[in-house]
Amino acid sequence: MLDASGKLLYVGKAKNLKKRLSSYFRKSGLAPKTAALVARIEQVETTITANETEALLLEQTLIKEWRPPYNILLRDDKSYPYVLLSDGEFPRLSIHRGAKKPKGRYFGPYPSAGAIRESLGLLQKAFLVRQCEDSYYKNRTRPCLQYQIKRCKAPCVGLVEPSEYANDVRHSVMFLEGRSNALAQELSSGMEQAAQRLDFERAAELRDQVALLRRVQDKQSMEGGNGDIDVVAAIASAGGACVHLISVRGGRVLGSKNFFPQVAIEEEAGDVLVAFLAQYYLSNHERDLPGELIVNAVHEDFPTLIAALAELKGREVEISHRVRGTRARWQQLAVTNAEQALSARLANRQHLAARFDALAEALSLDETPQRLECYDISHSSGEATVASCVVFGPEGPLKSDYRRYNIEGVTAGDDYAAMHQALSRRFSKLKEGEGKLPDILLVDGGKGQMAMAREVLQELAVPELILLGVAKGVTRKPGFETLYLNDAAHEFTLPADSPALHLIQQIRDEAHRFAITGHRARRGKARRTSSLEEVAGVGPKRRRELLKHFGGLQELTRASVEEIAKAPGISKKLAESIYAALHSE
Image 1: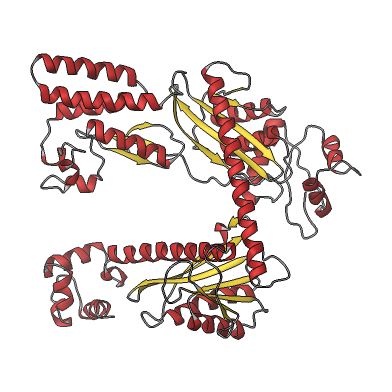
Image 2: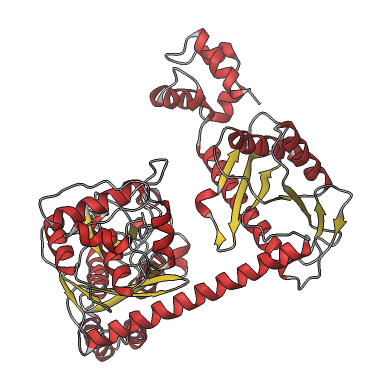
C-alpha cells in the first residue's frame, strides 16, 4: 500500500486478496489506526508468490528494507552475546558478539550483556579463570591486580600448573552447561577429601565455591525444565505494545529482555506476537533458533511461520501455547514481566507528556511543543572538540535523530565558534530539505551561546523558532538554572520543583552525556593513532623502521629534516613530509 507520493505505507500477505483488502476498505468498524492508514492509501501493488511461506519471507524482506510506518517495526539489530572459552593451554573466558570466527567453545546465547557479565563475574570469583585480553596476557612480566584480589591465578607468569588450571576450566564449563548440581556435589566431595588430608586451606577454598554456587541455585528458582526454549509473551494496549522474551538453554533460564515494537495497526496480542516472531527470527539469519517457542497467544499464521523458519533455518521448531508445570511458570513469568514493563513505559510516557505541557505553560505557548533540540560542546582544553545534538519528543528521546559534529578549524577552546559551526552545519542541511525544524532550540550556555545561535539562524534565514538558553546560574547547582527566552533581555528562572525545569534539565544532561561520550571516543582514537599514519608514503614497515632507528617517537620528533633523511629508506622529500607532520601543531 502506497501514498500519493509513492512512499510505501504497509506490506502484508494474504491467501485471499479480496477478503484481506475488503477488511480495510469498508464503510464502518475500522480501528482508528487502520482508518488513518486507509485515508493515506492511493495505490495498492500486489506480488504473487508460489505459497504462503514464500509470501511471509518476502514480506519480512520488504519490511526490513523499507521499514513501512504502518507495519510493526522491531529495532533490534544487535546479535545476542555468547560466552566464549578460547582455545589454548590457558584459555580465556570472554563475552562475544557477532560471527563465531574466533576458535573456541561458545555458550549461550544470553538475552542481555548484563546477564552474561553477571555469569562471568561469578566464574571469576569462583574458579579464577582469566578474562584478560590475549595481548595483555602475553606481555605480562608480573601478576596484575586481578591476581592480588584473588580473581585470577596468574597463568601469564606461570604461577599455576596447567593441570590445575584445566580443572578450573572444566568446572567453569560445567557451570555454563547448567550442571550446577553435579558441580556442587563434586566440589563438596573434594572439600571432604581435603579435610580428611588435613589440607584445610584447600577445603576452605572449595567450601567458598560451593557456597557461591548454592546462592546462585537459590536465585535460580526457574530451573528444572529441559531443552532449549524461548518464552515469548506479547501484551498490546491502546498506548503501545510490549514483548517479553525469556531465554532458556539446557532447562536453565539465562535471562530476559523487553522489546517495545512500533505498533501501527496490530491491536491484538496474537497479531503483535506473530509479527514480532517473524521479524525477530526471519530477519536475522545468525539469530539462534531454539527447538521450541512458548507463547501466550495463538494465531492462524503460526503454521506458515513454522514452515518459513524450517525453510530458512533448516530445522523444525515447535510453537506451544497450552503448557504445564515448569513451562507454565515460565509462560506466566513472561506475561507478568510484559504487563509490568508496558505499564511502566506508559506511565513514564504520560509523565513526560505532562512535562511538555508544563513547558508550554512556562513559556506561554499556544500549543505544546512536539520536538525539542538541544546542543552542547565537549572538549579537553580545546582538544578533540565535539558538538552534540539530542532530540526529544512527547514520547521521549528520538535517538535516531541524534547527531554528533566533529569541530574543525576553530580556535582551541572557543566554545562560541564551535557552537556556530555545529548549528551552521545542522541548519544548512535543513535549508536543503533534510531533517525537521524543531519547535524549541535549546542551547547549553549563557548569553554568548544564545547570541551565537541567534546569529546562525539569522544568517541562514531559518523560519522563526523559539530559542531557549540554559545557563547554570551563580551557584552552578541543579535547580538554580538561569533561562533566556529568545534573547538575553528575557531572563527568567523556574522553581526547582517545576516539571518544565525538570524536562529542560533532562534534555540538557542528555546532550552533555552524548557530547562527552563522542569527545572521549575521538580523544581515545587520537591517543591510539600515530601522527606518522597521516604521512603519504609511510606505511607500517617504514613507521616501524623509523621508530626503531630513532628509538621512539619522542626522539624522532626532536630530529631535523637532515637527520630523518639519514634513516633507511627515507628520501629528502619524504623526510620533509614527516617533519611537517610531526610539527604541524
